Length: 281
Image 1 (cartoon, rainbow, N blue to C red):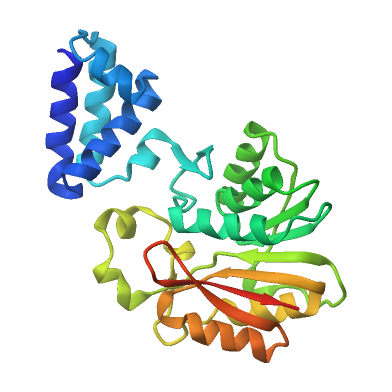
Image 2 (image 1 turned 135 degrees about the horizontal axis):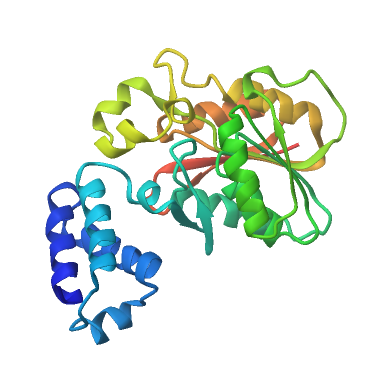
């Protein structure tokens, strides 16, 4: 089979679930990861005959993605902030909105030697991106999941990022006080269970529910301990950065202000939704 025919086959298989444009973008990712072909290569080599091993590998990817598995889990890789992260079903797939959160932190914190805490690190994407982008930052990242921490630690090794990983529960953070951190950041679970019906099936069926959902009657479940911990441990002038459910952005900002985090404000994501809350101690 020629490469051109395989590309057409993949696009046709994935269009019913993902739409034509998204299917084509996914095919480009597959050829980059598995064939090491650029978009230009896909045009220049479209008449090349694929060997049996290449065809079998691409057909397996096609079958799994058409069956509903997220492409990132099938490939074991996701791109985030210009970096290549390993991902498994133990961690959420990094989102483009969260890249904005990293950019916001980097833009607002040009100092050296910042002490950074990432609460609920998952794949480690935020912590590792910050460790690489901030000057001489001392980054610590925690997660309740041992499986997620194993993925994050492997990503840190592969990307040569210095991050200290610890296992801990956001809902049971230690009672402590004192200026321990200059930046506290978190992208905690914030999707209400009732919102699942409107989400893509491949997200609900395959990504870890514990990293996605909160009860409908307690949408701020993770933000209360996060804000309280940040207020107790941030240095003077330190900042708290949170990714939030757009429905509750104002509530999270009010929570931060009541805890003493001045200038708590809401930032929009690239779709125009209120997505981030930033407060200064």
